[in-house]
Length: 270
Image (cartoon, rainbow, N blue to C red; front, side, top):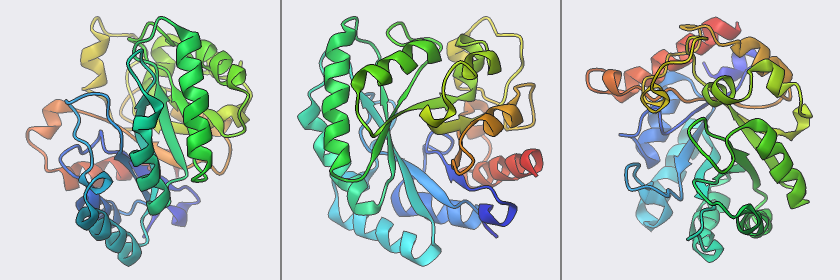
């Protein structure tokens, strides 16, 4: 059974199970019942491992074979950082891999770049490069960022780009911590939303937002208005499930965490 049986389609995000990559990620997603996976294709941080399928032909072939066998597809490429040191030419390998494996979206972030004109120029170049592979580039905002800290700044940023393949990633945690939740989301055209990442949490913000990002709750375990967020987004949007939780990662196998995440989402969304 996959997500389409309930009318929803789901993607397993690599931050939920960072131990898994390539074919192993695809097979774990298939066993749990996901329709898609996303992959770490261009990581700006050494803390999160680059999927070996990006650079290794054998790993890519194994991932492609697993996708063909299971029917699980690649959704999104994580993530392209438009910081001051970024050189768009360095994005080419990840985009080529994504195009080869059938990705439809990619995520861009700005962490950090005080010169937003520079970040915008790099974003426009990234969009142009991604368009050659049929990939839409969505910008994600972060509660702990300074450059693009909320949905309001990101909406203006993507509008200024003037490209057809732009959009916004709405992460439920960052939406609730920076943009007033549903009130903030309703200020933008829902067609701008090209990706949604779902985890849960309590309405009262914690003292340490950085810690919360790595201690997320499964959908339905907290108080976020996840149904309302999803209902505002385009109806055909794939629901990406991203709930990094370090304490669970120490004791629960990644395959079990992936399955629990999807089961929780299905209970919430029907």
